[in-house]
Length: 311
Image (tube, rainbow, N blue to C red; front, top):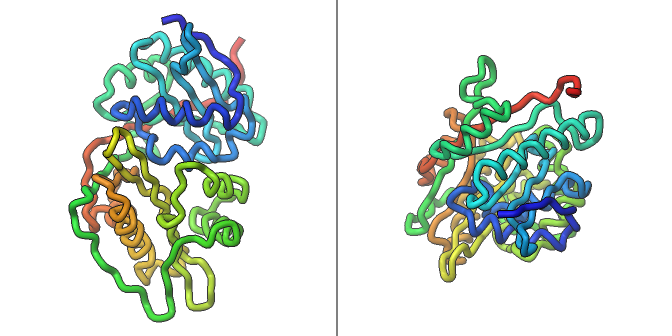
């Protein structure tokens, strides 16, 4: 397969990028939530996206330097094999060093791989990426969890004075961004990013859920995403979910999650998925308590780029 890289042309390429990920869903972690991830501000810099096409101009692979997540999202057709994978990782190396002292740079970048993707893991290790499950400090691994649509969704009534409903569109973008930033203690979420999610063709407003406190503040959120990977088969994903620290004792995150699950089921999902850290933290326990089960282990490979550039 003769493959060459071409320049990313902005939103015109997004649909084909998502379609390729859907075609390769079995080998790709981020598929259902791509409308959310590909709306991030990292893509405002066109050079943060690499596209590769075959001799007919068909998309053969893509990669995005996802600065807000410290992660490289990438997808490639397996027919091209390890050689193409190495080319993508060489591009990652170059782009990582180009962005070192810019708004888009990070001192380290991470890549996800399913535990059973032996060849992918081998190529990552050869390219200098290290499985973070074996890190001496801050060991890190993830899991991919599934909840079937046939399960009954638990009901968790809200405390008095609280209410739950879909986000009020553009009118609440600013309030949502402030909430998101407070929950994750980072300014990564931006007004422009959130607005792009609202205008994405795959966005469904009634599964974009917020919890409102008695004083009118937004205090928790949960967004559901849907994807029809094959005709008639609809699957969903939760991304993201959060609650203000000072409101977590009320179970509002659980209520938002269950409301979103119930609404996803009204859209006919066969299964709902979520990605979370594998250690037994609060998020893992929450998902487990409402019927999610681990179906795949996810390895996190990292590479330190906070080093002098080579010759």
